Length: 154
Length: 115
Image (cartoon, rainbow over all chains, first blue to last red; front, side, top):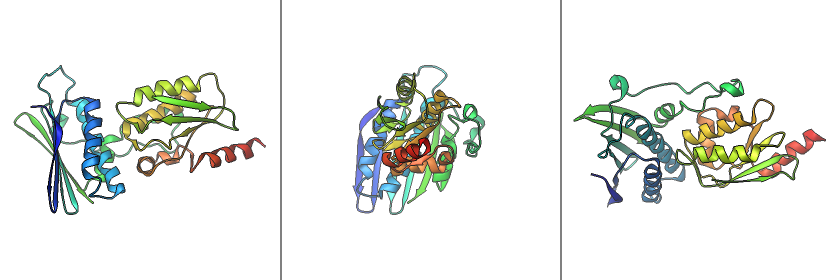
């Protein structure tokens, strides 16, 4: 199930990046760098940065929360980034545990202004960033897999 | 992760020699920062000119660096690349950390306050 390297399908107005990795922070980093390279000639530096940030937050969430219960030798994360014209659809599938409550969290950004140093938040920004930077966020549980689909309007 | 300290000027400058502060590098960043901050006093300016990518894990590590300094010492940031500046702005961390466009500006602001 786990394969690398990346496959990039280049049609005239459609560019697709697909890969499948084990849930590991180092693999996530490699994937983000590969995705950057695949898209670098196609979108502006500003959008490239947004795509990388959203990708990092989504994939790191999965690595941290989806595979916590026990070691799973068959654990995988599939990434499918599909760029058509001005839209990037980022679909991420994993075979970890279901999202608690069956839907994506939608927390506000943590309060930081005027907060004492010792109380400043060191986390809790991930989902807020994902929602802030994505036009649409869809989640479903299907065949014991989490399917998260994001739409980014470039 | 390699961090270097320049303690010769009006303010301590800690430079990050890495392109990414992310989920992979966050703990290494905190450990390296703690080592550089130990035994020093005053504000620390974190020179991020080499950092092209910072995610929420990296942001958490920068917040942790301020906590390492405690209440008496300020962490300030300098030389943010666009992608890093964007994360600071979206999360409003640009209201928490004083941000300098370059090292000269950071040093100048501390020389005048010392004079």
